[in-house]
Image 1 (cartoon, rainbow, N blue to C red):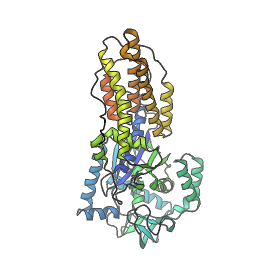
Image 2: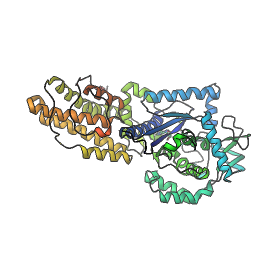
Image 3: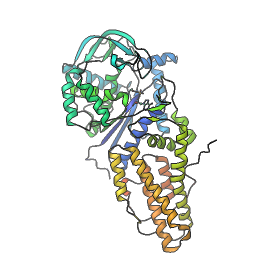
Image 4: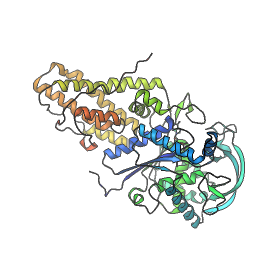
Length: 492
Ligand code: MSP
C-alpha cells in the first residue's frame, strides 16, 4: 500500500535538446531513470518521474534553419519524436515538460524576479570563447588545442552585453552545503572535481543573450532573452507547478537528478546556487553517469557516430537493449557500445540463463497435474535485501548481477534435482521451489525488463506483484507455458 503521508520520490532525467532525434546515449539516461522510478513504485513509494525537452537556444534555431523549418514547428516535431521513442522503450514518465510551454516560462520569470529582488542579477558585458554546440562560453583551461574537447570545434570569440547571475556570491554557501551533504554528488570522484573547482573560485554567470530570437524573453529587459541553462534548469521546479504548486509540496526537494557527467557542473553548482537565491532547498542528490562511447569517442549528434535506440530495439527487443545498457557498463563509468557484446549478452544471460530457466520450469509444471506445494529450499530474504540495498545505493549493475546469480542458482537447482526423474510429493516440492523463485525473479527484474516480467507473470497465471511479495507463498496461478522469452541470435 502506498503511504501518501510519506514524501514522494522525485526523479528526473535531463531535458534533451531538440536538435535531433534521441540516440542511445540519451536513451541510456532515460532508461536508467526509468529503472529507478519503477523500482521505487515496486517498493510502494509515491513516485514522480519527470523527463522532457530543452527547446530554446541558438543551436536549436540553427538546426531548424538547416532543416528548412520554422523553429516552433521543428521543436514540436522533435518533442513528439522524443515522446514516441520513450514510449517505445517503455519509459514510464509521469510528466514530459517542454521549455517552450507557458507553465515553464512563468516559473522561469518567477526565478528571475526573485533572484533580482535578492540583488543577484546585474547588467554587464561578457567576452569569451563561445562554443555554439555547448551553448556556453568556455574558459581557456577547458579548451584542448584551442577547441571544445567535446565537440571538436573552434569556439567563436564573443563580446556582448549580458545580464549576470551572482554565482560568485554563493561560493561559501555551496562549500558549506557540500560539507553538510557529503553524498550530494555521486560518484564521489565527480564530487571531488566539483568541490575543487568551486574552491578555486566562481565567476558570475551570464544568463542572457541579446540578438537571440529563440528564447524566453528576459523579464527585466525585453531586448534580452534568457540563456538556456538558467531557463532549462528551472524545469525541475516548473514541472511541479512552481514553488506554490501542490506537486511541489508533495515532491520537492528532488530525490535524484540523473545527469551525464558533462552537465554535472550545471546541476551541482549552478542549480543549487539558483535555488539558494530564490529561497528553495537544493535537491538531495545528483548522480553523474558516464558516457556511451563508440570507438573511444563520445556518441554525439555533432560527431555523427550515433546509434539509433529504436533500430536496436526493433532488431533485438526493447528489453534486450535495456538489459545491455544497464549491464554492460558499471553504473557511473563509461561504456563502449558494441553490437557483438549486446548479442553475447542476449545469447548468454537472456536466452541461456533467464529464458531457459523459465521455459524448462514451466514445461515441467504444465505437464504436472497434481497440486504444487512444498517448503522453501533456501531462504531468499537476504538476497532480496541485498539487491534492494544495491538499488538504494544506485549500484544498478551490481543489483542486476545479483538477480542473475539467483537465476543461475535456480537453473543449477533444476540440474541437481533432475525433476524429470521425480514424481509425487518430491516433484511437487521441486516445482514449488522453482515456480516461487521464478515469481520472485519476475518481480525483481520488472524495473529492468518490464515486458519480460509481464510475460512471466502471464505464464504463471498471476497478476504483477510488488517488492513486498518477494517471499515464498502459496502457488496460486494457472500455468500456461508460452513461447520462449528470448530468441537466440545467430551470428553469421
Ligand atoms: N539540454 C541539456 C540538459 C539540460 S537539463 C536541465 C543537455 N541536453 S543533451 O541532449 O545534450 O543531453 C542530455 C543527456 O543525454 C545528458 O545527461 C547527457 O549526458 C546524455 N547523453 C548524451 N550523449 C551521451 C552519451 N554518449 N552517453 C551517455 N549519455 C549521453 O545537455
